[in-house]
Image 1: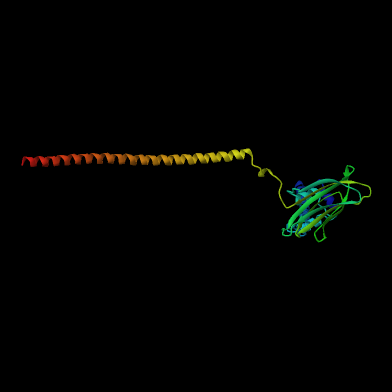
Image 2: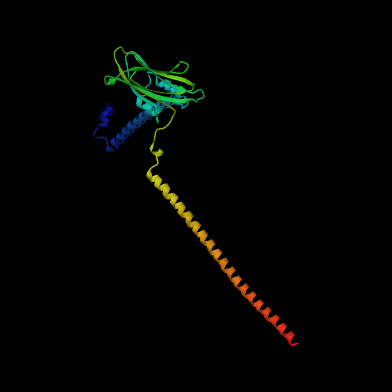
Length: 274
C-alpha cells in the first residue's frame, strides 16, 4: 500500500516516474522474450523428434509398397497413389463390363519362362445404379499365393513386381445377391511412358533440319568451287608456260636447222670452186 501511494504520489519527480516506467517495460520485454524462446525450443525439439521418426521410402521395395497400398488402413488417397506409382501408365487392357450378382470374373497375364521381373500395374472401378458400389479384388501368382487383395472397395490401384514366370490371375468378385455392377478394369505391364510433347517432331523442327542441310550443302559447294577454280588457274598457268616453252623450242630448232643448211651449202660451194 505504501509503495502504490508513493508510486502515484503527485509530489514524486517526473524523472523517477519515467525511470520506473522504463524498468517495468524492460521487465515485461524480458519475460516475453524468455517465453518465446522456450516456445521456439519446444517447437524445434518437436520437429527434431518428427524428423528422427521419419522413415525414407526405398524405390527397391515396389512389391512391399503394392501390398501396403492394398491394406484397408492405407491413408494415401487415390490421386496421391496415382501420382506416386502410376505415372506414365499405359494400359494394355482397358475394359468396362457388367459383373452379375454372385459371380466372379477372371483375367490372366502370363509371363514366359525366361522373362525378367516386370512391373505390373492397373486399377479397377465399380458402380451400380449410377453410384459407386464395392467389389472384391485379388491377384494370385503362379504358385497360388495372394499378391494383392482388396475387399469391399469401390475402386483401387495395384502395382507389384512379377518376378516368377507363369500365369497371374486377377479376380473380380461380386458377392451381392441381387445387385449387378459395372466394373472398369485396366491392366498394363512394364514402365513405358505415355506420349509426350518432347517425343514429337514438329514441322518447325523439320524445316530447321532441312535449312541446316541446305546450308551445309551450299557451304560445301562453295568450298569445292573455290578449290576447283584455284586448280584450274594453276593448270592454265602451267599450260601457258608449256606452250611458251614449245614455241621457243620450235624457233630455236628452226634457227639451228637453217644454220645447218646454210653451213652445209657453203661447204659444198667451196669444193666446187676448188
